[in-house]
Image 1 (tube, rainbow, N blue to C red):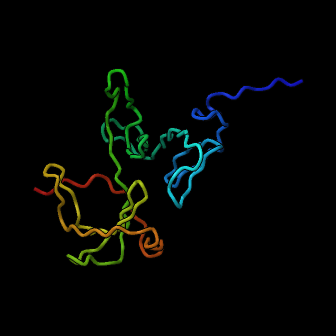
Image 2: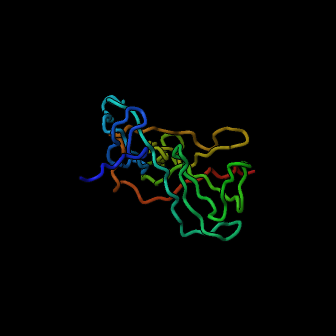
Image 3: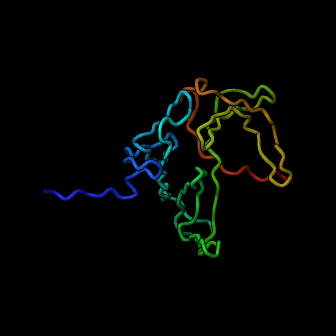
Length: 187
């Protein structure tokens, strides 16, 4: 007679004791595993049944870029809250001392920007399509910026948030690059 295998904590729901379902991937690329007695209702945007969700950490992605401080490879890392950053692979976080050990280079990524073939209705400059890390999209003026010291917008302040059914088709704009923290204002 075969011996029954005991399910480990990793395979059992911590709330109700039911087995966990299959691992799924969200639109933003994060992996999760729901309780088999629960599901997500996209219409009501609520859990149905058991609401236990086991989130998996996002593994860092090695980039073909060098650290400007020490020359080591950069990695793209996602925090547990979905924020993205480029950081030096030679640096690690010591949770007991709450300090970086090794190289401390970090560059936070706010989202992506793609040029549009549309003019700003306020100033006439070109508009860009900005996509946040959460996947929300807006049309904004290409001259827009942010003064971190004064905590104030610089340049043209035109912004138009798009609803999902208003997202432009890919062929309407050129491929763009990543947008990082806005440049420092000119003095």
